Image (cartoon, rainbow, N blue to C red; front, side):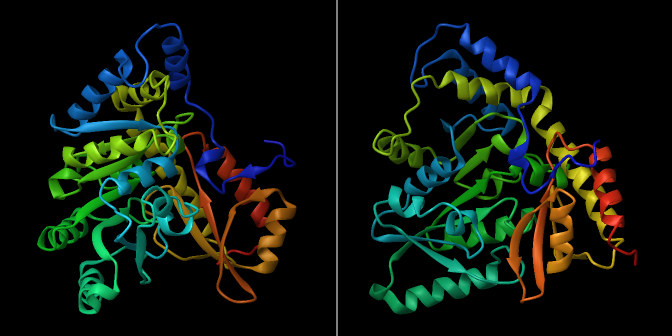
Amino acid sequence: MNKNNKILLGTDTVSGIHPKILSAIALASKEKTLPYGNDIFTIECKKNISKIFEKEDIEILPMMSGTASNSLALSSFLRSYGSVLCHIESHINKDEGGAPEFFSCGGKLLTISNSSGRINAEDLNKKIQEVNFKGKQYSQISGISITQLAENGTAYSQKEIKDISNICKKNNLYLHMDGARFSNALVCQSPLSPAQMTWKVGVDCLSLGATKNGAMAAEVIIFFNKDLAIEAKKLVKQTGHVIAKTRFISSQLNAWFQDGLWLILAEKANNTAKYLSDRLSEFKEFKLVYPTQANEVFFKISNKTYEDMIKLNIISNLWGMENENKLIVRFVTSFETEIFEIDELIKRIKSFCSKN
């Protein structure tokens, strides 16, 4: 690898399209079939998802973007007078540009803050009690949204999801999961199945993302609670997300699922992230912030270290600032990240950092 080449590890969306998925798009282009989700590829996609998630009684909505997927999923139960509880660092709160509120015509996001990056049952109960105590002064809670992986790269355990689900049932609330990196979270908690991590522990709908893990642009909302799909379908056209040639989304998903490709790609990304995490942790200048469970790695570094990285074409994601002198950066590996790229990164880091 040329030392002048940029090492792009700030996000997994810098990756390309897996060859099998690219081939599937080309094959779908040769097939004349019905539009608007009535095509043979979307019918096959629903069958594939039913099999993988071990549930026949589902509905799906293929989407082109994670923002549309999350916002439509939430709008299936979030009304203009209602609210959804989520973590303060969640993607729907910090990175969707107000889309969930826009899609729901004014529904509100109420946030929960803690150091773990994940909602826990204790904090959730406290927030619900706080809202209920205020009564009419607060918007009515419609549901809970959790992110898998969480924004700090950690994964909700099966028990954590079950505990949240129990609270939802107790309070007649829906449970949504933002699964942009669900495949990475699933692999790191093997041998748990997709069903065991979703509807079997009470998840009502899942925004499942393939774009970060091999696809060109392919997301899908999976409604384990079919009543929610009825509401979501009413909003698809109004929000501008009816896809005439749905087959090009569904064909990507079909190739992604075939022979477990989605898990194979996620496992590779997770493994290279662990390698990166272990290697960078050897340097005094890099302090690991969160445990590396999947394909995201967070380090605390100085401004000087960050500037040196930029000079050497090491591109991470500037995630946050602890103080004037300390930054938090995020590295994300993808299915295309190779060990030799990590080794080259370490070689460059060695030129200005010292080992522990």
